[in-house]
Image 1 (spheres, one colour):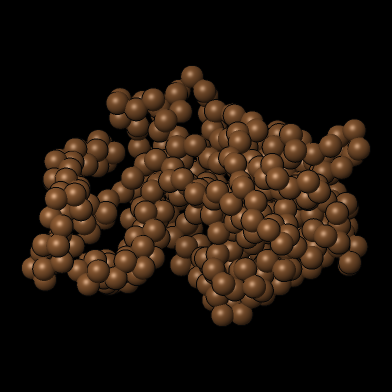
Image 2 (cartoon, rainbow, N blue to C red):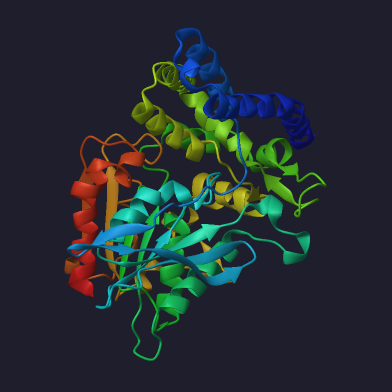
Length: 411
């Protein structure tokens, strides 16, 4: 009933949102110089903030149309290379680039936000790489006829994507970079490919801020995941998609619940940001308005997860840490990370990460016990939290060179 109540609230607020949007449109089209009067600026600033402070359920655009590659700007075009029911393999093609660049698959989290959260990650990688991303779909828009999508299906999707962009005849794989939650299924996928001697197993694997072993320095997030039983999560957080959507009747973990949980951890900061947004709009400080507004356009865009994927992730990754214990099963077979011998490993952690603490990602090195020393690297980035590992100036200037150098060394 929670999803239905949330939908009823959204329906109730829709007229007010429409009125606020119409008001700001009226200001821009009709009022001319009068919109700069102090009272008018404050009134319309309030309407604009109200209209913007809403949860949305559609993927925002990546908005990457060109990038500096080499010594010149080149155009970027989005192409769906592989369309699967629960996610696309999306390619950021650069037609003007003549020299082949290393192919890299960016594995985006499936934890409540769209893959566009990694826009800055992709844009940076595009300088020197041929970039693909796992563009996950909103589960509430996937019909029941598409079947289930659990943890093992996620692993299968990654294997399928890597096979699609690899070169099996030359026995040459692409490169892989996983951010946050998917580090566990990404490592599992590479291990399964190694066990099968798959010709497309990746040449490098970069794991960034991921919960490989949540027993290491547990965070508040880890404690929330282990503080209740599997049955509690199933009974209290799993909802049914309302009938108006394509995925009607599907059991999901709604993105709005995940968003509310994240925002509640720093509610004062979010209220403060919207207060600043109001003031910047009223003061006609457009650069600051865009900075805060763009962040919340992304942050408030959420997707639903299938119930089976969410519950299995809670169980296998956070509550039982099966991969770290060597007990994770995939299609009836134990996942053996020691089978990985050809894929170089880079782990990246943030010194101030309060979601995946220091040590949780580095645990991958102990699991990949057959890798020779020169194929293992670890980077601890000082002065950043979770998001600073893959977004922002320190990602671009200090973390990214570590990724690029490993790819170049193994390409």
